[in-house]
Image 1 (cartoon, rainbow, N blue to C red):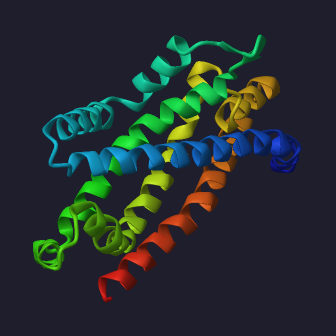
Image 2: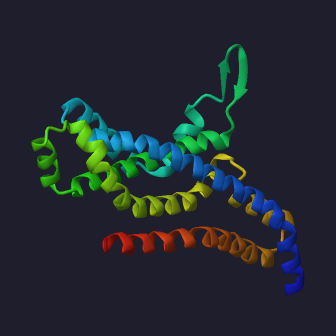
Image 3: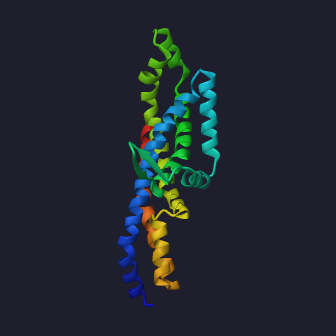
Length: 228
C-alpha cells in the first residue's frame, strides 16, 4: 500500500473517528460538571467541624481517589440499571452515560482534595479576623474564603479535566463507541498492517490538539495567579 493510498484511507475514516471523539468530549464535559459539583460538597465536608460529616467526606474522597478508574467504570457500567421507569415510561440508560457517571466519581474525589487544599491554604488569620468581626463560620467561608480559593483551584481543575479527557478511551473496553473504539474498527476493517500506525497516530494527534491548549492555559493562569 502506497503512502498516498494510506493517507487517503485515513482521510476517509477521519469523519467516522471524529464522531467518536465528539463522544469523548461529551463524556468528559458531563463528567467534569458532575464531578466538580460533587467535589465541592465533599471538599467542604472535609473541612467541616462536624465529625460525622468530615469523616464520611474524607472516606468517600480517599475511596474514589485511590480506586482505579477502570474499576469504577466497570462498577457503573455493569451494576447500574440498564433502564429506568419514570411515570410508567421506560427509558434506556446508554452505556456512554453510565460510563460518564463512572468517570465522575474519581473526578469528584480529586476535586474534593483541590477544594480542601485551597481552603486550608488561606491564612488562619482571616478566619480569626472574621470571627472577631462577628461573622459566622458559614458566612466567612462563602463570602471571604471561597472567593479567594477560586484562583487557586482553577489551574489544577483544568489539569484534572485534561487528565479526564485522556482517560475517556477506557470506555471502549466496556463497549462505548468513542474515538478509540472507532479507530480499532477502522483498522480491523482495512485489515492492513501499514494502516495501523497512521490511524492510531491520527487519534493521538486529536487528543493532543484538544488537551495541549488546556495545559498551556492552565500553566499561564498558574503563573499569573502566583504573582497576584
